[in-house]
Image (tube, rainbow, N blue to C red; front, side, top):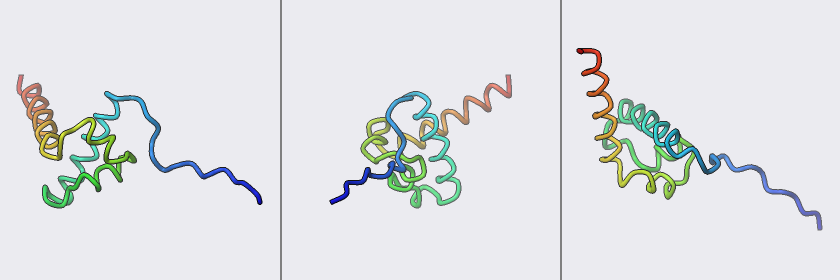
Amino acid sequence: MVLTRPGRSARKPKGGGHERRGEILVVAAKIFNSLGYEGATIWRIDEEVGLFSTALCMRFRDKDEMLVEICEGAMEALLRLGS
């Protein structure tokens, strides 16, 4: 019997909490833009980011929270431009 080492997972390693949260929001914004709110699922977002859905859910309650944070960031950017 020959034992082989399992291949590396396509999932990302742990760590980088703040950066990872920002990465999730960037990906979620792209998915919301391309598929709309209904088409943007937690599964699609975590698949694109490369996280397990449990890791995603540790950072956000649901996709509503992601959308609110994306909108708040966009409004803050617009307000900075206007000042």
